[in-house]
Image (cartoon, rainbow, N blue to C red; front, side, top):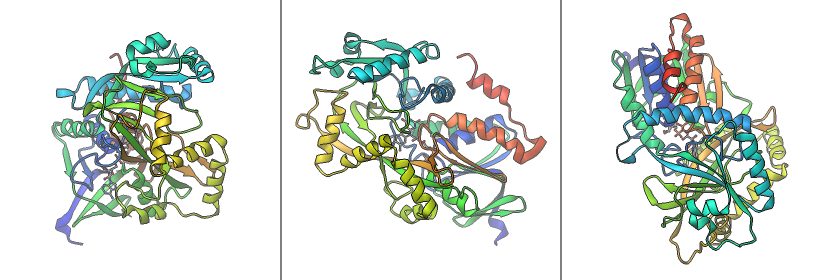
Amino acid sequence: MNREKIRKYDMVIVGGGVTGTALLYVLGKYTNLSSIALVEKYSDFAQVNSNNVNNSQTLHFGDIETNYSLEKALVVKEAAEMLERYLLKTQNSEGLIYKKSHKMVLAVGKTEVKDLEKRFEDFKNFYPKLKLLNKQDIEKVEPLVVKKRNAKEEIRALISEDGYIVDYKALSKSFVENVLKEEGKDINIFLNTRVNFIIKNNGGYVLKINNKILESKAVVFAAGAHSLLFAKSLGYGKQYFLLPVAGNFYAANQKLLNGKVYTMQKDKLPFAAVHGDPNIRNLNEVRFGPTAKVIPVLERKNIKTFREFFKTTKFDFKVMATLFKIISDRDILGFIAQNMIYDIPFLGKYFYMKTIKKIVPDLSLENLEFKKIAGGIRPQLADREKKELIMGVGEIVGDNIIFNITPSPGATACLQSAKSIARKLSKFFGKDFVFDEDGFKRDFLENK
Ligand SMILES: Cc1cc2nc3c(=O)[nH]c(=O)nc-3n(C[C@H](O)[C@H](O)[C@H](O)COP(=O)(O)OP(=O)(O)OC[C@H]3O[C@@H](n4cnc5c(N)ncnc54)[C@H](O)[C@@H]3O)c2cc1C
């Protein structure tokens, strides 16, 4: 080993998406760690799932996300409020990082309307700004949701005026820019730098990156699906396997919606049902989606990750039994079957159009430029021992090392995950480690 090429750090973060950059920001600003490196394999931050073209750009508060129970919604609410506070105090010239927008969930038909009204009763005390709208109210806010809708079709909606469209890539860059302003810290960013492998060494870790060696007392992998690959290479997370769920969007080049419009989803499913979202980079374009299809790669548009997928997921008896158990649930099976249909050439577009018409009834293939866009991949973790899906953020904690695998709403949860990781670091670094949790709370958890 060439000694000149060895760099030593207190902490190395692998992955420059929104999770890794938020963690860098929190550790740089609120802890006494003095030397931190962030390693990202691409030439810029947030090129994978945190890229604005790859996700739905929503700051999830849990109020209109009907796939969340009240309990889960309140955890998401706390995460969203932390990020909201960061957004509001951050320079947002020309709406680069966020734009304010209403968020609505639409109930169509008697059963959905009944469920929505019940949800409103259960949620209203926790979300005082949430309003229940009737057809006339909806028409004022989103005229095309009502136009040409069957008059007999009952609709109601829950709306929150306080929503945000977020460019999580711009947010990632802002975390990095802001933490680099901290004085007295040795923060190094390695772009275009892939971690090739990691080994344990003297209670810490040695990472091989390009032509350098990094030594670190502690490491956090915020590398999406790749976090599980590295966890397994060190013998952690053997009980887990991955279901990489790719999401496509269909985009209409017209200002069909003024804000975000979600549809109702079943709470057993980890992903939101189809929704329409104005694109933060072009508010005259509305993206509908995302679809959900399991594909055997760790990263979209990167076929090399096909082999890596099979390293994270070996189809042994326990994995097959888990998959069988998951899909034996009627709701999940129905969801998978429906999403498979959307991928059939030509026909898929037609069937998806029918789903989108639930939001905008007066939509037709002829009068719209309607294009399919490949989004990112939600790395959905499953447990082959417990034979179940892991809902929410996946985290594996080892000796002085943490692996974060975050499907949805991982971008919303970036500061919450960072806080949770910072808390765990006292176990790694002992009594000399300081996390200024009061300062963090003052900035992100107390009065707006
Ligand atoms: C279709 C879709 C819609 C979504 N919509 C929303 C939404 O509206 N709101 C929301 O909150 N969340 C949403 N999510 C989830 C959200 O996008 C992710 O949870 C979030 O972006 C994950 O961020 P991350 O930093 O953990 O991962 P990523 O953004 O994937 O970043 C991981 C980084 O690790 C790097 N990396 C990997 N391996 C290595 C290596 N060996 N060496 C160096 N670097 C490496 C990658 O290059 C990448 O930059 C959506 C996801 C999808 C797929």
